Image (cartoon, rainbow, N blue to C red; front, side, top):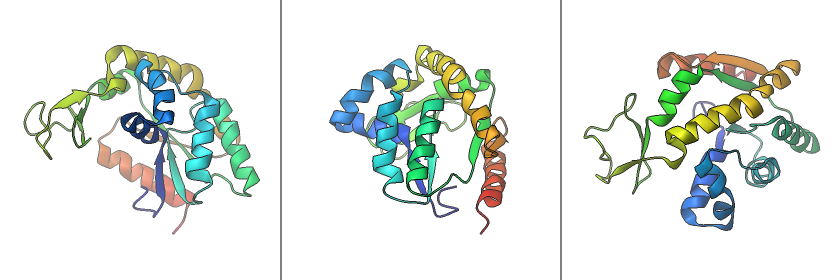
Length: 197
């Protein structure tokens, strides 16, 4: 969607994983939260989003943020200070069972970082990266116990954002169980309504 609509794609997960891989101070600070399946504290996450995204550009997709009501309020305040507003909040609706299957099946290349899924996007040769031939491993945030904790955290801390954005008339639901192409088409329709070309 970022490419289709010429928007910056800002994923807090990618930002944090890159910081961990680089061994930066931010990476050291967030690593323990990521490995345990816990959310990075609101204040730190919001500060990173403001400094690395909101203050840098006006046209972006936030992926993985906000994840708590406090982060939702933080984002409103960041945008208010810049006389900006959110176009839409997309909620990808998926059962816990299917989310568990999708998350625990993720694999990542130890060398080039390419992503795979054992069922939905497997490599040509089991356990080996198609791009560079390096070994694939389970992402640290995809271990079963970590995923169970993430789903618990989602229900407790993230799901309340559905009502938060519904109240503001910004929420759009997309059924996420269908095939990726179908989900992409539905998401594109949401984006077209929110940002007519």
